[in-house]
Image (tube, rainbow, N blue to C red; front, top):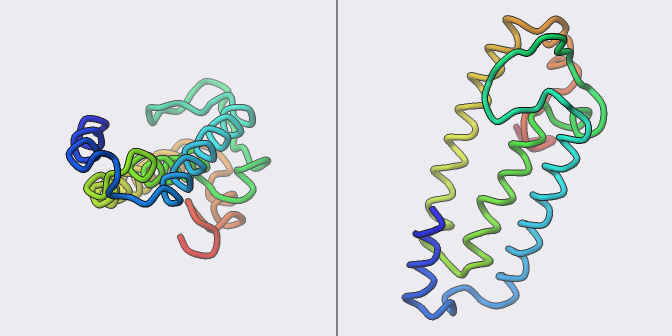
Length: 136
């Protein structure tokens, strides 16, 4: 994906996206980093692959008190922020496809968690939103 951003931005001399919007993109990338850090700080079981681990329990503090998938919520900022920062409208359009892929993954991950992690159903009833409070 970075190749797409670079190619698209390079063909327009990085000028297709207004500078103020590139700054917003940079801020989104920073928000992604902070959100990912907060997620891993709160949950030692967070991993890039869907798996249940020995001794794993439901985490409902920190960012997990706000949304059920805080790392994926952080990734949304990265997927939108990176193409803006690099000046790629094409990358921003492709981000929509990647966001749908992350949403699909979260739904399937929840099936695993509901089936194998005690207390996950109760947690999901308390924390209603997967990524974006008041939306989804």
